[in-house]
Length: 278
Image 1 (cartoon, one colour):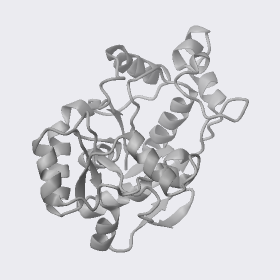
Image 2 (cartoon, helix red, strand yellow):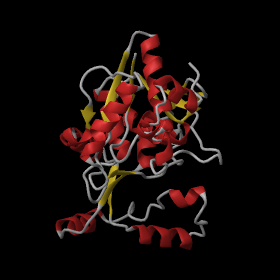
Image 3 (cartoon, helix red, strand yellow):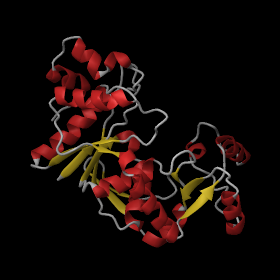
Image 4 (cartoon, helix red, strand yellow):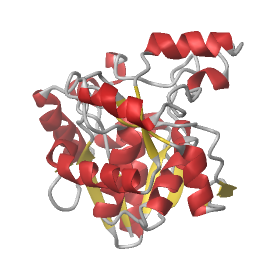
């Protein structure tokens, strides 16, 4: 068994991270497996060098020691480019020239409420672009992202399911996320592609993460299937929330692991604050 904890070095770890890391660590160690650490640092505009060390310090203090050398996604850009090219060769990607404003205007035209689920799904504006015209726009230097054609991918891979230790077997629905971005305009990769490529590269057998990412698993199973990657088992666990029922975020400095450590709490007391039960 191989699990991983994959924080972004864009802020301090908080109680929610402690819960996630503990869940991944204990699942692996109970089976004599490996617990890996991956720094998801492709968003260079928000990453700060000091957070790499602070994340590792917090994990060691929590007695959640990882196996091997921590992986940094910024060292893996060639691997993501190779995967994107493979998807392109399969005819499963297309360039998207839309701005956020363009997308919102199209959604309003389609009468999608700004707060509805549909507002989060790309309306497919660039999917039907003439290939020659799109290629010329790229040649002219027009900024563009690359999106997955989820309907084409579904026709290629057929019916898919994923297994979750909490929720059981779920059928993949390619419409949940729509045509997600695989490579952003500012960087040559995006979250969904990077995480799938890295999980396969690291041999991750069990993906543990918050239940807020349950819907992401639909598109990631699609990518695993068309890239001929191994299928992991999932564990989407509950989220740690504040007294108002809101999910903890990095802006909530009062619940950062460092602040709690500096207040004199023990690692066991901090884990207890997350509500984690082994």
